[in-house]
Image (cartoon, rainbow, N blue to C red; front, side):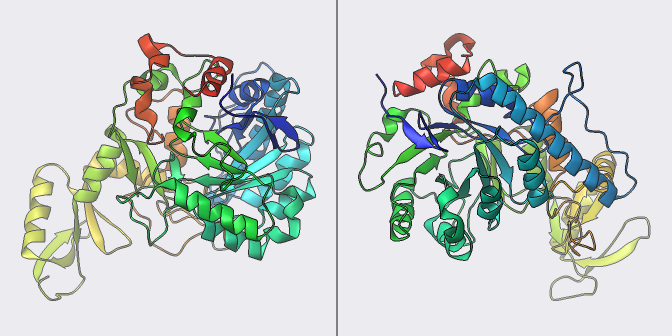
Length: 465
């Protein structure tokens, strides 16, 4: 017996269980199709998805352009080709069961261009579009043009209110649902506002209830809210299910589908998930998007934390207590630090962190020559995977730049996510995960390293466990 009842989503009655879309080939057609085949809603990532040759082998995303703009256009072509391939794969695996959604980031490169081209070329294969990481005002308009439902991802009722008033009220018939993604619990990029603290989480119920009240004022009583972030056992959400105050509610699972037979992530990543402990997930601010993001605290993040800690403020001329002169770089530029700052700089240099890298905030971070060379190469090799990037200062505007100095405290997100999703070491790359990922090591369902099929996972979730 199921703890929830089927719900109408994207034009079909299905289980109110939604696979969260995880970018860069982590949610693909195989995992999405399997989730839909079990009468749920599968969601593949439209963010630089894999495409295949005639033998079914993944086509490497190699960039030949000599300029960022040329590489940016190559990336868009890869993204479109890959998303269409994954849509077809998901549709074939689903066997006309469930629903198939595509997830995109509004802040990804050419989001509108990619959406238009994928929906045009994959007609009839995709039933809904989920979209967050920004304010996707044009999402409804684009979805309506191709006759698919749209699902904005928000972290507050205020955000949805702005989207509705500016754009969505004109295409409300295609609004399939609203995803509330909890900014403290969800994995990946999180929608923390400037007024919210990353270390002071708020309970989701009052925030979701406020969202429902706003939606009801707009006449959206029957439009479901999809709770995303921190969802593991449905039995822990009994007070939400069939709650007349919340209305129609569905649940999105982003982390649990990582550990299934159909999940395309490498075995090393799957083994890593089984070892995560409470407190191992770190809500950090290193992402080149400028958003907070939730990831496993591993060697990759620890290096970024250490780099950021090896940081001092500098001035070009003496100012206040910054009177200690300090020279750095090939041209021996002279800057001014506090006496304490100069002592720290000399200490770090003596430890081997001899390269002083300037940041947009008039600070220096100190790195080894080897790491500094990698940072520089990654910045030069930028292919413009985001609408704007603080790591490389790329922007998809006419000038191709944000006009702000590139920030070495960040990283090339395209490089590390492509690496970890295919063959890379999960300890040496960014490993997105929700705050509940530690439960893999405590949930008896995964005892002795058990990895279920997607259907087995859904059957388990439906029992409340």
